[in-house]
Amino acid sequence: MPRATRPLAEALARWPVLLDGGLSNQLADQGCDLSGPLWTGRVLTERPDQVAAAHTAYARAGAEVLITASYQIGDDPGLLERSVRVADGVARTAGHGVWVAASVGPYGAVLADGSEYRGRYGLGRDALAAFHRPRIEALLAAGPDVLALETVPDSDEAEALLRVLAGTGARAWLSYTVAGGRTRAGQPLREAFALAAEAPEVIAVGVNCCDPQDVLPALEAAASVTAKPLLAYPNDGSVWDAGTRTWHAPASPAPWPAAAWRAAGARLLGGCCRVGPDRIAGLRATLGPPPPGV
Image (cartoon, rainbow, N blue to C red; front, side, top):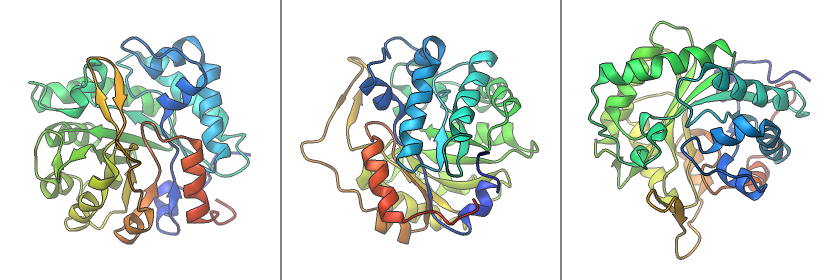
């Protein structure tokens, strides 16, 4: 079966679409070694079959979008292309319509020092655009359905990413990582989301890899400045410690008010780090099955 046949933007106008969950946690559960700066990209390099197995776990849980293992990869065009090819292979055998979203992680992800949760790298927009351009070109050449501009901590970086996309005809979503009603770099969310309001390449905006309690205020901020569909795929409320490369879990499970997120306009829903196939299967049950003929 081919992957989803209609554009993702068209689907979002008709029904809520289910994203996958965290790739890193699923690979870890499969016994993979994620040490080193490439993180999930290391597994993609050494054991692409394990990346395919992780994608398969989410497809079986009902995910309609698989996000590639390209988040922390720099400008290696062969590896970027492989990330799309591996996800595409799973999407074509999933048994239901699946889109492939090519992950474009922030500059801070490639630094592998936790900078994606701070932003403000000391680089201007021109330098950030120059960094992202070859990565985006390589991913687009591999033929994904959409780009996932994700875990963006800084509206300056968002502006650079949008500059690279302008005029390409590509389709993408823009997803910030946020805390306390602001981007991780401290910018007001209304201003951050407004950057994408008039960008024809952007089909949805929202948040990912943040505490679930930060999702609803961010969606409300986005809805106040754009009519684009919204998206939400937070983590489980844990905090990443870049020094020890470990997650610190919350004292109690974070609430996951998906119904409130949907009411606020979220059309793409899923999970990020430490959210596994079981949680995605639960969301699938909550959302109900997608319509036939996707």
